[in-house]
Each structure stands twice: as C-alpha cells, then as structure tokens.
Length: 140
Image 1 (cartoon, rainbow, N blue to C red):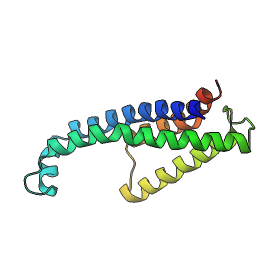
Image 2: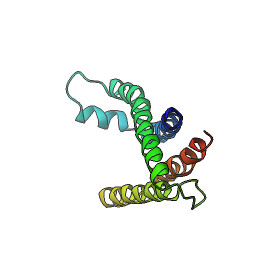
Image 3: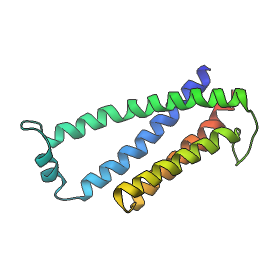
C-alpha cells in the first residue's frame, strides 16, 4: 500500500511539472495577460501574487491526486488483477482513459477548441496515470 501511495506521489509531481510548464508557457506567451489578469482580480491583489500562489499550490494538489490514484490502483489491482492495453491493470488504465476522454470532451465544449497545449496535458495525464503508475506500482 505504501508503494502505491509513493508511486502516486511521484506520478502526481511529474504531472504537476508538465501542468506548470504548459501553464507558464501559456501565460508567458500572451503579452497582455498581466493586464487582463489585473482587471479580474480584487483591488490590491497583484497577478504576480496569484501566479506565485499557483506555483505553490499546484504541485501538492497533483501529488494529492496521485495519492488518490495510487490508492484506486491498489483497489483495482486487488479486485481485478488482469493485464491489458499494455498495462499491468486493464481496468485501471481503461478508467483513466475514460476519465481523460471525459475531461477533454468537457474542455472542448467549454473552449470550443482545444489548443495543442491542452492536448499535451491530457495525453501526458493519460500516459502518466494510465500506464506509468501501474508500471511503477507493479515493481513492488
């Protein structure tokens, strides 16, 4: 069980790195993002403080998600330990792929188009939690 939690934290932190990298690239590539953020924030709260808050909060949040994913993998591995889809647990990988497709569909409906950076993030999510987590957790 501790191995699954540790693997979940590792996968969550890897996902946080990719998520922050893509997010920072999006924010840095828009020249007027600082001014646009300043319009929506309350008086006295700078966009720099919001970005610093995100850099501090995002990695532990993804690590917590990784812990939950690791525990769900443990549950899936105990209840249905069959391999498939190139993973050590078919059920868990299929659930992650369905969740990724659902989130991508919701993002497409909200944004009307999904830029390539969003696709990078969703593909990385599916790869990290769908295949890397089961592979690392099966090394126990």
